[in-house]
Structure formats: C-alpha cells, structure tokens
Amino acid sequence: MAEADEASKPLFAGLSDVSISEDIPVEGEITVPVGSPSHDDEYSTLDEPVKETILRDLKAVGKKFGHVMYPKKSTTLLRDWDLWGPLLLCVTLALMLQGGSADSKEDGGPQFAEVFVIIWFGSVIITLNSKLLGGTISFFQSLCVLGYCILPLTVAMIVCRLVLLGGTGTASFIVRFIVVVASFGWSTFASTAFLADSQSPNRKALVVYPVFLFYFVISWMILTFSPSHSDGATDTGP
Amino acid sequence: MAAVDGLQFQEFDDAENLLVANRDATTISIGDPNEKPTNQRRSLGNSPREEDDDLLGNADSDKTELLAGQRKSAAFWTFEYYQKFFDVDTYQVLDRIKGSVLPLPGKNFVRLYIRSNPDLYGPFWICATLVFAIAISGNISNFLVHLGQPQYHYMPEFRKVTIAATAIYSYAWLVPLALWGFLMWRNSKVMNIVSYSFLEIVCVYGYSLFIYIPAAILWIIPIEWVRWITILVAMCLSGSVLVITFWPAVRDDHRKIAIATISAIIILHALLAVGCKAYFFDAPQIEVPGLSGSIASGNGTVTAVKTH
Image (cartoon, rainbow over all chains, first blue to last red; front, side, top):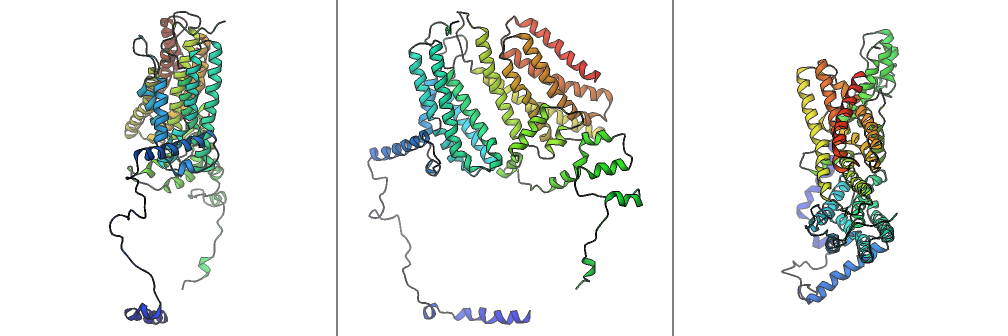
C-alpha cells in the first residue's frame, strides 16, 4: 500500500510543470467556426429554385416506391425515411374509397376522414406495439415503412375502380377479389421484409400479425367498395 | 483472515429426509418447484385441499415469488413502464390462447399460464381482431341473407365497426375493473387466499374473448340453430375458464355472494355474445323470437353452472 502511494507521487507531482511544447511536437490549427458555413463550401438548399426542391423530394419518394414494388432487404427505406409518400398514398386511397354522399338513409361506405384516421391511427398503433415488444426500429421509420407498403393496395384500388366501370357482375367481383388478394399479400410481404429484422426471432410473429390485420382491414375496405351511382343490387346471378 | 474451513460448502439433505427427523420443521426447497413442494405436502398428509393447490398454483409459487421481485420498477410516465407488459414471446401468447379455449378442470388459467407476467398484448389484439371479425362477418352474413332480393343495395355499413369497438373494449376493460374493485372490497371484509391484480383479471378476460373470433366467423352461416349452438359452445368453453379462475377467489366468502358473483360473470359473458349476434347479424326471421330465445339460453346456462 505504501509503495503504491510513493509510486503515484512523482506521477502527479510532475503535472504542474509539464510543458508540451518541449516534449511532444504538436501541429495543426485550431479555429472556431464563426457564423454559418461559407457559401463557397456548401450548397445551401434555401437558394435553389423551388422546382429542384420538389423534384428532389419526388425522386426520393419515387425511389422508395421502387423499393416497395421489388422488396429486397435494403436499408434505404429505413435510413432515409420520409412521410411524403405515405401522405400521398393515404390521401389518394381515402379519396378513392370515399363512400357515396349522405343521400341514402343507411350509412354508406367509409368517409374520407374515417379512412385517413384508420390508416394513420393503425400505423401508429402498430409502431407502438412493435416498440413495446422491444423492437429496435424508430418511430418514424416504422411509420414510413407501413405507409409506403400501402402502395400495392392503392394500385389495386385504381384497378378495382377501372374494373367497376365495366359492371358489377360476378366476373368483375372475381377479378377484383384476385387483384385485392394479390396486392394484400404483396403489401404484407413487403412490410415484413423491412420490419422483421428489427425484432428478436421469438417475437416476429407477434409483430407481423398486427401488420397482417391492418392490411387485411384496408383490403376489405377496397374489396367491398361499391360505387354510389350503381342502380340496383349487385346481381351475382344463380 | 477468516478460517478457511468455514467456507466449505455443506451439502444439505433433501426436504423429505430432514422432515423425517423433525416433522414440524420448516424447510424451503429451491429446486424443481413442480415436484418437491407437492411431495412435501403429500408427505405431511395435507390431502383434503390437495386439488386446491393445483388450482391455486402453489406448486410453483416459490419460483414465481422470486421472479416477481426481480422485475425493475419504472415510473408510469416512462416508456419502460409499459414495456414490461409486453414481455411475452410468441409461444407464450399461443399457450395462453390455448389455455383460454381448453378449460382443464384442475388448472387455474392465471396461475398456470400468466404466472405473474400479465401481458397487454393478448387482450388488446384479441379485442381488435374480434371487433373486425364481428364487423366483417356481420357484413358478409347480411349480404348472404339478403341475396337475391332486388331492393337490397349492398352497404359496407362502416359505422358498425365503431360501435363494435366501443362495446368490446368497454367489456374487456370495465368489467375487469368492476370485478377487481368488488374482489378488493370483499377482501377487506373476508380474508381470501387468492387475490388477483387488476392486470391479471384484464388478461383473463382478454384471452377469454378469443373463442368468439371463430364463433363470429361461423355466424356467417345464415342458419339460426347453427348460430345458437356456436354461441352455446363458445360460452361454455370460455365461461368455464372464467369460472375456474374466479371460483377460488370468492369461495371463502358467503355462499350467496360467491354464487352471485359467478353468475354475474357468466351472464355478462353471455350478454356480450348474444348482443353482438343480435345487433350485427340480421336474423333470417323477425327479431322478437330471437330475444326470447336469448333469455332462455341465458337462464339455461346459469342453471347448468349451478348444478355443477
């Protein structure tokens, strides 16, 4: 014990007269950055034309659409998350799903606000669920992935509307059914490919099931969409 | 420094061997909790309440008491506080669902499956699935019932989802709250062996609703007697799980209060099922025969419980 004290004494005692310039050569500059970075070095995005700003964001959104349509395990969707794409898809879907006007005595299809709330509220709940189960994904990343994976369902909605223009018979129902089921599977598969890595393997099914339920409900809304101007019941025939 | 001999590890005999010497000694066995304590009690001749030990789950109470104390407690405004209610794996959730559907006569759902780890994942997502299952099945069933009628225009009837959600979530949260309050109040009057925490009761109720999901899908079939049989079977299964769970908690109370509590649990469970069926699924006939049929079925279930 006493030896340790003596060994430490010269170590600390000599600190007061250590002069770095004699023992260790030091080189370099120390400057404090004053003010904003100079405009010569960085391209400030405030100065660019508006068209470029919009195009850059649109390109990012478009690139992510491509990632959703061909889901492979890439981290681009997670790394550069943005919520423009989900907003665009959600508004499009809600506009197209909007039920008829309130002239019928019974309640019709979902209104714009209902679809909007379901999509966003559902995404928030699924994200909270994933985080509570111990997932490593961040809140907005998860919202981004869930929102972008609605793209196949939006495409299915457009296809269904086009098919409905041709009539509401059994054939159109079968075509719509197949399209909706295919896009439901695609959405679930795409979002699972992005989200499943962030969970421990014991709980993967617990995280995937709410996603499955979410897309199932949206697919159901798409499949049962009936245009308000149709005259008479859906004649499915014998 | 201390003597080295005193640090040698001493082997202690098994509990049974020690008890041979001194019958009244208290021994604690920390080993395989499923086997040793029950052997201990059987050797002490404690047989009249033997089956109750399994019911109360005292077979592994040592282990659960130990583990319960190790959980760290966070403040209720932090995220970690709520994370401990989602500390379940997939197989645990599946086990609990299985336990809620298959009532085993001697096994208590709470002690056997929940074991001081109540989760909110099961109740929340089972209720969500049930809401959508009822709404979607109701929609399909109405469509099938009115098939071929030219004046029927198909409506998705979206508003019913909100009503279903309100009804089911209030049942899953308010009834456990009332039951927990009632049990706490009775606990202060009469000393009960078993008391459940609020979350455990929520857990039991949430998982007991699982049986209604396949029942709701079967209600699509527009034949009345199929629907009533489905309700009866579902109610018997999940109702018996509830009865087996809550019977130990009210057993030591006055006879009338115990019976009244158990009957109230069953009647509320039946009311939920019958109410959902009546509201969301158009009967192929007029509504009135269905209502009188529901009262008869409710009474029949209560008397069936009493005779058991």
